[in-house]
Image (cartoon, rainbow, N blue to C red; front, side, top):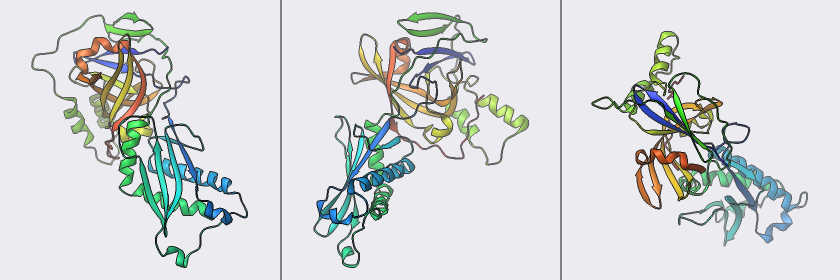
Length: 355
């Protein structure tokens, strides 16, 4: 059982519904992405005589560990685990064609979209072995690692990222968020819906005539920050202006993703897919976009700062609609997996202050 909690936040007489996506561990810590398995095997019997001090299988394990470290450094949004065989998995091996030797990588994943999922990098070009000899024992580790780094530094890195976005969720673990009353502020009435707790405002006011300015206008102005630290009254004013609970924004559904903001700041402007079960219906995919700002996960019982996103589109059976049409359906959703849809890197100097 998984519990969603929806909170109504008043922001300059506008209601903003915040979906708390409980893609987190039972210890209430920030969600760690699903581990991507990494495996390496030589697959060339002709090199068996190059191992006389350590077994070939032990070198394969050492190479696997090193390649997992390379992946973690080059693609930090996922966690890479050496040695496991489940999917999703990066499978690596050597091959030889005439005088060319290659390091190959294949991404093993569940069935789905047809996309590129295999890549190669040259280990030895024609003529290289006329002046060199094949490595022996642990010398293979650095040789294969260097060729693999070249593979991930090339254009193929973007293709690898695209494949991971489609088939490697950032999180799958679920846990119940304890129900706690929201202290102070706007009064709430509570409606319990089959294990999900939906809070709605006891009173509601209409949108002021003429609408409200876009949130991006305020963020754009405040994101133009110098590298100099902001202190004193300027910092206090900036905090008040940028805090999500006080911002003047259009009525919209938003969510706090359980990805610790300090660690995943680069992804805070990215697009995410949130796959949910819709009670008595089927699977709904929520398309969302990061605001570039952090928000407490959870707002009424802060545990850490997560990535704050706007829920844009509701996709059910290929029929895509605005999420605003389905606000009343949100309490019936149970999130099951969180995916990256499109990586939009946030500038490292950007810092949106929230309270």
